[in-house]
Length: 155
Image 1 (spheres, rainbow, N blue to C red):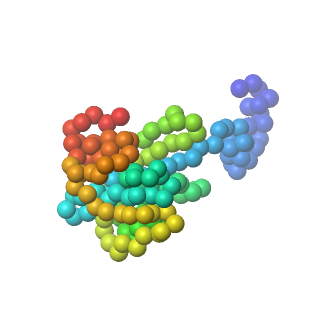
Image 2: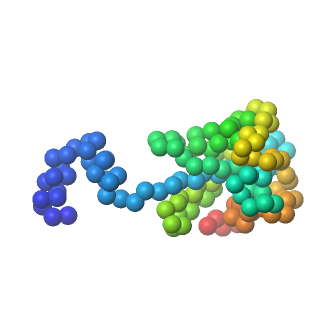
């Protein structure tokens, strides 16, 4: 950074520095998904209206400005299914696909009643991790595998 830029940077302080950084850098969409398990250790999978016909996947959605990723997952699950969850460990963080970053957490069902949002979700069911349905998205299949077999290396 040249001296003039450095001087301007130091003069801006606080909120102006953040605004300058925001304007100068690429913007990213942050997707959050979850391997949500019930008491029987079955995984919650959805058939989503936005996904290709016949596909299943983990509950997921996009973070809103200023939202913690764990809260994004809680909100999306509540909005799409009516379930309440407790978010646990981060299982996967993936970047490099255009301007998208994806985080996947392990979570457990703690309450709520199934109440699907029909605009977004066609079906929601719990499946044994070893008996997932045909059409499960490959990336979701691999992260479920890391929960099922924790000794496998995570990517």
